[in-house]
Length: 290
Image 1 (cartoon, rainbow, N blue to C red):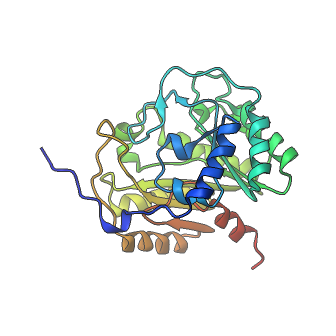
Image 2: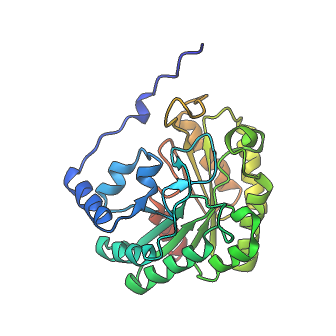
């Protein structure tokens, strides 16, 4: 039996502002809201909550997919909370968010994959926090392109859908997902709404090669993807897939250089990078005049 890899120094963190973290959590708890920060056991939760930011997770806390990398709960889907969009709008206002990120569990049990709920959430955010830009991190909707159109019609500033890993690892990492379907979603989003920035992310450290990561970059660019995030996979528990490698920060910098040369408009690449980590920096960079 192989011994687990020891976590390197560059992956060790410290919590700085306990008071601010508590204030952020108090707002979220008072409004009974889920965050992917908690549900996915994000290593950046202390930093983000300390900066009074969070990524809202809608449509309950239970996912219908069995992805082997993700800590989000897999259980019977919950009833849709129709008041949730309003409460998210209230939280955005209370937290003073300039950039709001909303994601969801995957709800393959719903005919529209939750698209209507995403739309209602964007509507409430814009009603209660009109100065905020909005980023949506959506599931693949089982290829329901009418549902995708429902989401795109809300005109989020950024439409994010993560590719997660290289095609060769999909059957192991994402057995209910399809690489080509995820690429098609990004391509359709860009074709239907060219003014919306599209975004995707990949984890490394799962056994992929550098060439495979580069090929994913090429596929994303060919399908109009504007923004790329690359981060280290961290194993949530012994029931999840093992880490094969702790990728060195210099390799993340190399990936960023390669992605820049391929024409991505904004790249975040580093051990702690996650889809919504410092997401406001991406939209700020894209909207700033040259």
